[in-house]
Image 1 (tube, rainbow over the protein chains, first blue to last red):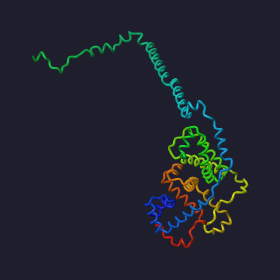
Image 2 (image 1 turned 90 degrees about the vertical axis):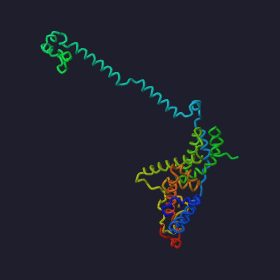
Image 3 (image 1 turned 30 degrees about the vertical axis):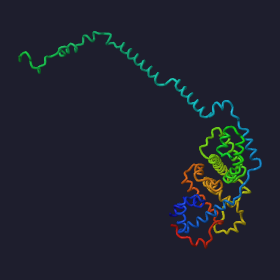
Image 4 (image 1 turned 135 degrees about the vertical axis):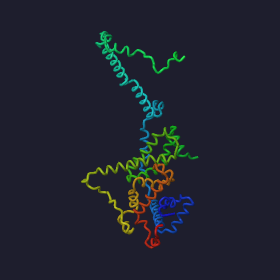
Amino acid sequence: MKCEDVSKELIAYLDGRASASERQRMEAHLEECGACRNRAAEMRKVSMLLGDLPAIEPSFGFDARVRQRVAAEPQRGWFARLVPAPRPAFAVALLVALTVLVAKLPTRNTPVTTQTAAQEQQEDFNAINNLGVLENYDVVTKMDALSELAPATAPQPDKTQPDATSND
Amino acid sequence: MARSDVQLMLDVKAGDDASFDFLLQKYRSPLVNFLHRMVRDTATAEDLAQEVFLRVYRARKQYTPSAKFTTWLFRIATNLALNSVRDNRYARLAVPLDAPPEEDAAPMELPAREMRIDEHMIERDRTEFIRRAIASLPEKQRAAVLLHKYEEMDYGEIARILDCSESALKSLLFRAYENLRVQLAPLVAQPVEQRAGEGRPS
């Protein structure tokens, strides 16, 4: 045992609560270390001095005052018997009430989104209705560009395919 | 056959106020003494002890014997005492600097180690000297020493009351007794001839 280890075991050694092996190790250390031996002797004296300190007695009216305060405690009524733990019960009730309240509240985002989508749809519809180009179909039918595209869109014979009739 | 404290408390829980009175009789003196040594004021100690009993009574319906009754009782007492000491310390700090000094307040200085016992015995009462040494300890060390020395509780019980491990408690107790050894040096110091054999620490 080293001097640093004494700090955790010395009190138990002095008050007789150390195990047999701890006591032996401590005694072996105290045998060879004068500083720890002196410290142990002084601590033993400290313990004896503390034991010399006289005890005080509670004042004459102490018990009466305790009984008076106990008697002044409110008695448990029917509510207390019904709800033995009022604080947790109150907390649960509060939680339930808050949950219901939050569930009943109108949510902010959903209706606004629906309304916006409906509005956008209506605006798009109005925009299409107001398109002048759709009111005058002649503009579309008489477009020169369309007539030029017609031959180009006709299917062309595939030159890369071999002519089956000529081979047979 | 004598009922255990736990059984008495269970009887209180069942509505037997006589059992509460029995516990009051049994623990009034240890509690008042413990609190008196913690707060160093008789009136405050009695007020706190009343509060401890009142809290025990109020908590009777929720009482479950999960630990020793004394662990529970002294845990309440320790917490109240620590709060009181801390509140009192802050209240004392709030005293204006130009306030007149207390007439009965003795100086807190402890005698020097070199002072002979008979010299300081003239200066101060021995008992008061020991009380002051205890009062000079930090609150948690003080509570540990009082529970260890006067209530003779085992380490496990004190550790539960002070909410620390047994290993931490042993270190706490060592520091507390070491502080007391220094504070009480004029009463406990080994004579020089005995100290001569003091070797080097290993």
